[in-house]
Image 1 (spheres, helix red, strand yellow):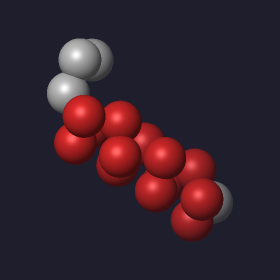
Image 2 (tube, one colour):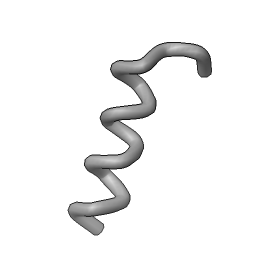
Image 3 (cartoon, one colour):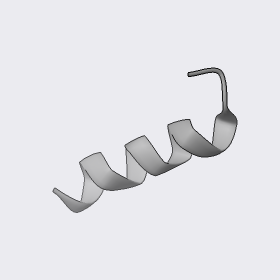
Image 4 (cartoon, one colour):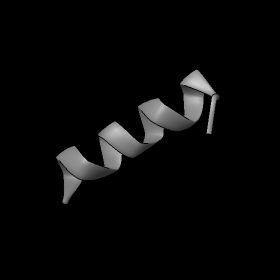
Amino acid sequence: MADPQHLNIDTLLTEFQ
């Protein structure tokens, strides 16, 4: 879990939920 893109996706998902 050291991928910046993955972190971005996680943040976006949290914002969408």
